Length: 232
Image (cartoon, rainbow, N blue to C red):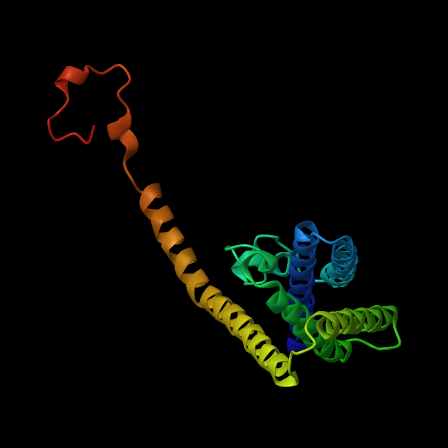
């Protein structure tokens, strides 16, 4: 497999995780909302993110059918990885751990960052194919979510200064880069440690294979006559 193909699979997998994590965050916000209009907005945002997840999973699945099964398993979607990769915090959903204003700022900045990420993803596929059209539509959804969060700020936090939103964006950008570095380190450790684990397993198998198990056969023997040095 070429590096370009491997990058394609990795990007589709990571984006599916990111979109699914966002869907869960928005669903949690929907359940926590006390106002009907907020509940309605978060619900539809969550639905969009679920649909985006399905798009990237379908692209991943379509490509995975044509590669080695062992390699395909490496890029299989696993819900537990949402926590392992940092897309969902084990401490709880963001709406539960952040002030509501900060949570809206998170939505405002991340939707714009997501749109920028999709611009890069669009370069991996032909923009004029079905896949390209799907990603372009997702970009429009992200911009719409960004715009709705901006309207919320203007309406409910009119004193919020532009520099404060810039601080939010820089913070989220750094966190996104941190997640990517963390994931790269995990992949590096896996490449280093996997041969070590396999070597240890192989040696352990040889030891077990050459053990003399006759000592454990007590059928038809008087246990009172066993040697005091016996392992049983």
